[in-house]
Image (cartoon, rainbow, N blue to C red; front, side, top):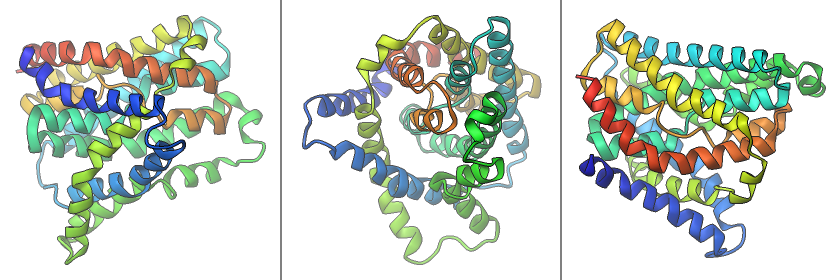
Length: 312
């Protein structure tokens, strides 16, 4: 487990460095917000495009891999829905719990996959992101509109919200473009692919610094028992479903180990913006994001070590 901790340590050093820079207002006020936009709109899409445009889609395991990840999404969502219904939790908090349970930080899972499992692990993680990112965006928009009813749809129709979640999302666009050009046999593209690869090399370190800078320690004051319920969904139900599905579908080795990483990383920082847009409890969402990110620093090495013992 010590070697795993050493592999993961650079990822969390960058996260903490970003948090420290934001705390010290270094290099300037508002700087990290701009970096966050740069990584979201340019660097990370370049990474996703560069890799999805080169993935080998002829592997017969891909259907099973997609089914495993989507099954984990469904089971975890059902768990949260039942929990919030039984406990009669108000819709804004319930939808934030749902986001905290089913969403994952794409940036961290790619960084961990590449750090622990190398280039092959990174490619598998990007493939998993290509499956889950569009699916979760569609699922969350539909779920939150239904959960909040008219309060979330006064100025937004469902088709408009879905188009915003899909058509204007740079991560989804880059995935769709990379996969399409790949399947059509049009990649690599002269100059374009080289530029994308150059941008991709700077994506993960910049993303991790920006994620660290987005941690909001002051938001922890708003956390309550609902955090632990949502954390159970994120860190227990989601990965446990993946492990059981891997066993059921006989998916072993590196694909299974990378798949389970999606259940060990914290929820997505973008969940805060969606909570504000669609009527969720944004304050609790900020607390969930912050605490899950801090928790993952402690539990990730243990979880990865245990998964390597369980998954053969």
